[in-house]
Image 1 (cartoon, helix red, strand yellow):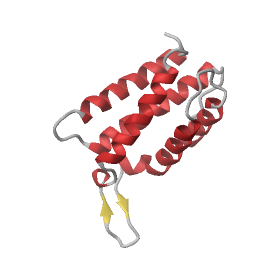
Image 2 (cartoon, helix red, strand yellow; image 1 turned 45 degrees about the vertical axis):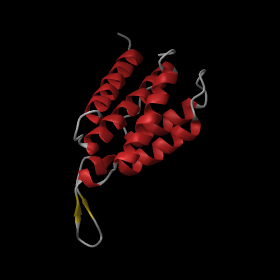
Image 3 (cartoon, helix red, strand yellow; image 1 turned 90 degrees about the vertical axis):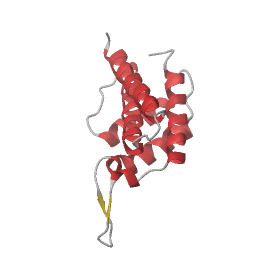
Length: 137
């Protein structure tokens, strides 16, 4: 399997896993959010390799590279969705994994960082990007 197909395969596995978890009676929304994030990051990496670029190690660089390359993608991606997801994931990624200590001293657990409406929005956007990239990867 090529590098870009490997990244795309990982993206599909995490996307399917997130969708399956979301379909359960009581999904762990922070887990679903992180799986959508990881799927998105792997989609970004697959497009990066498609353009014969080296995949950056840092998360922000991966996402910024994706945004730059998405503008060149032969099957147009919705740049507004890519930019929104980049910004949202960059700000939220660690909140899905670790407790956040607020300025008041209160501790906010990962499961309290996201709600179902936001998850549904993320799901729709990541699935759309997946659909658009599938034919070329």
